[in-house]
Amino acid sequence: MFTTFAWFRIWTLQYINKDQRQRFQPYVLVLRQDGEVTGIAPFIRVVSSQFGLRVCKLEFVTHYADYNELVLGAEPADQTRTVMDFLARRNKE
Image (cartoon, rainbow, N blue to C red):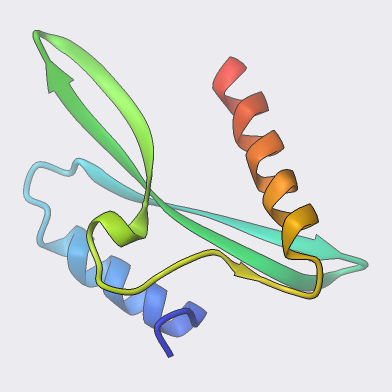
């Protein structure tokens, strides 16, 4: 139940609606193979400010919720590697 798209969507909307400073944004990666969804990687993009510098970072949703994890299909090691490779490439942009 806690790793379904519906739960994540409702929880995220509730959490973000309570965020008066608009620091949190959902950052959900959807893995597809041959048009089929094979995995979901739900993160939260956090924008904070320290010493006058704006910092953006991705955090696992588990930092803010009791339950959540990557929702992966039959090949979790390959899918995890795909997610990490994508995030590493995005970090360089």
